[in-house]
Structure formats: structure tokens, C-alpha cells
Length: 166
Ligand code: GDP
Ligand code: MG
Image 1: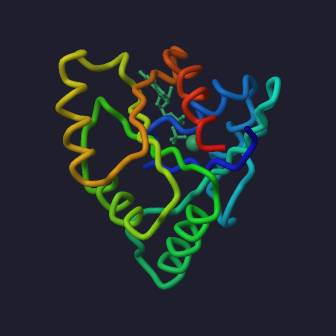
Image 2: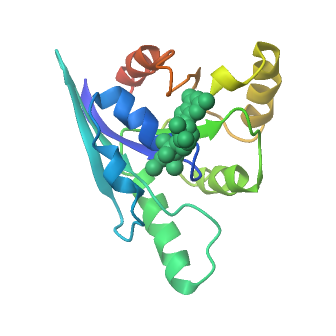
């Protein structure tokens, strides 16, 4: 149960917070500098028989230039090379253009994508199911896992679920 996992999501959805919570140390903080590299290894999770390398996959947003277009293609290429991808969304904000653009890119990717609905501490529990339905209508996600990265809720479940794909 070892492998590579890419994390994608709009800015501020909680990618760094989740990585910190999973790895248990403050590595991902460094990633808040603007990123120009294609990939960044954010951390390695090791426990018992599991070793998971988390890769940040920056730059999946509507390109404004040829360079941006190139970077989107590179990032999407990375998604095709990993064992699984986590698509992190902010459940308190709902489905917007940024998420739609990322979902559009997932169409060409065969890698299992786990929809991670973050910030559930900020929403009414009844809001969750309609939101899941909205996202699921747009892509065939391998799994859907609601979490609060900030409070650490359900993050262990996410790691367990992830193991199935490694
Ligand atoms: P990134 O840009 O995707 O890496 O997002 P960050 O990890 O930097 O988080 C952006 C903001 O959202 C920060 O202020 C976090 O404290 C906050 N945040 C992240 N996860 C959660 C969560 O589960 N619940 C709440 N309420 N806030 C969160
Ligand atoms: Mg970050």
C-alpha cells in the first residue's frame, strides 16, 4: 500500500492544511510561495505498511497565457501518472467556475479521483448531500469523503480510503 497521490484544488480550499494534518508536521506551509515548478513533493506519509508521497499539482486553472496553458497541460499530465488524486473542494463555498475548470480537465484522466469535501465544520449537515449530487453529476468520482482538515475530522478515514488505490 504505497504510492503517489496528487492533490488538486483551487487556492484556499485547504490543501496545505490537509497535508499538514496528514503528515503531522508543518511542511506544506512552505508551499504558499508562488509555485513555478511542475510538481512539488509536499510530504511523505509513513505508517506501518503504508508510504504515501503527496504531490502538489499546482496550476490547474483557466490559463491566461501560453505559459499558463503549458502548465495546465503539465499538471494534467501528472494526474495521469499518479496512483490516485484528491480533488479538494470547499464545501462551504459550493460549485464555482474554478472547480468546474478542474473537473473539465479530469475528463481526460484515467486515474481514480477522490472528491474530498473540505470545511464541513462550516456547513449545515443537510447541505452536504445536495452538494455531493451536484459534483457527482459532473464526474465519476472513485469516492467522496467529507472532512474538516482544520479540525482533523474524518482525515483518518480519507487515508484508509486512499489505501485502496495504492
Ligand atoms: P490551500 O490554498 O488550498 O493550500 O488552502 P490552505 O490550507 O492555505 O487553507 C486556506 C484557509 O482555509 C486557511 O485559513 C485555513 O485555516 C482554512 N481551512 C482549511 N481547512 C479548513 C477546514 O476544514 N475548516 C475551516 N473552517 N477552515 C479551513
Ligand atoms: Mg496551500
